[in-house]
Image (cartoon, rainbow, N blue to C red; front, side, top):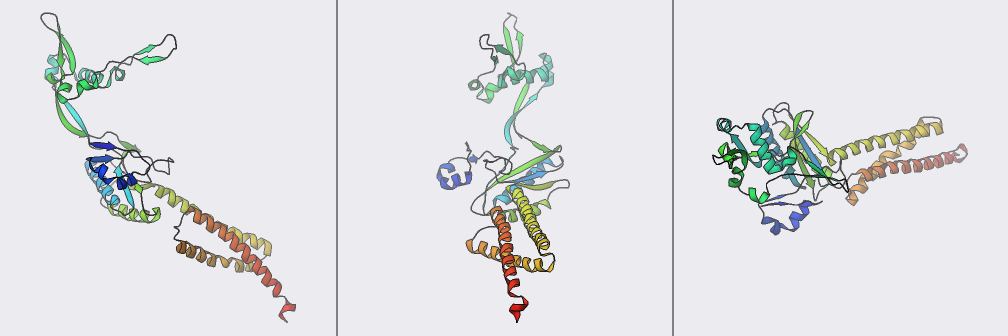
Length: 335
């Protein structure tokens, strides 16, 4: 039995209710887009494996291996492959010789089977418009699902009609012209620049994103070496958003220090005095790192914003002390 659950934190559900979920053969949590793309969904990390169409099954095995390695990292939960690559299906092998004897071809057999299973809306849409309200409604013909609940019932689907010597219609069944076999097919496929893409989604639990991202990068680097030529792995989702945010904030912090220095150059009309003032910033950074370590706070966007603010406060305090020291160091005070 397959249990489908949609929740914001599926890992917590599995942790709190292990006995209840243990009764099911498989527990599937519908994947969501990474939080960097859509707010409120479940996925936090996305790994895309894209490449050439050749060695398709080998690529699927490589993605499965990548999913297992990512899932073994402490702090990673709910790893799953976005694409369903082995969904159960039936393959109908048509006996064209027998079908020709009954005056049928593959297109007619497929159309009749499609009408029976998916309704006539898929083949020949038909509408009826309410003359009072003007609302159109579909008029469809479809075999009721309870009547196609077994493989034997499926093979008894009529695909043609002939007349008996008495003039009564005799339906030609699917079992007369086709043989059904069980197989596995992908239910959905993703592409990027015409090349197939497999997506591994994962969630985060009990650890910070930065430390998990470092281990994921090492795992991806190891799997990348085992891929066939033309294939690659990209780490997206919140990991990419975190790296982009840290890079932008670091650049902003550097520019903040440079602009403060240039502003003081204009005020002091020289380059030496602002340099003395700006030397307080290394001590400020040391204090920031020390406080983050003492409080157990991870490096994040809010902490980087606080670091930028600390640069301004430290610069202002250094200017006040430098001006006070300048006033005390006049020639009259030095005598």
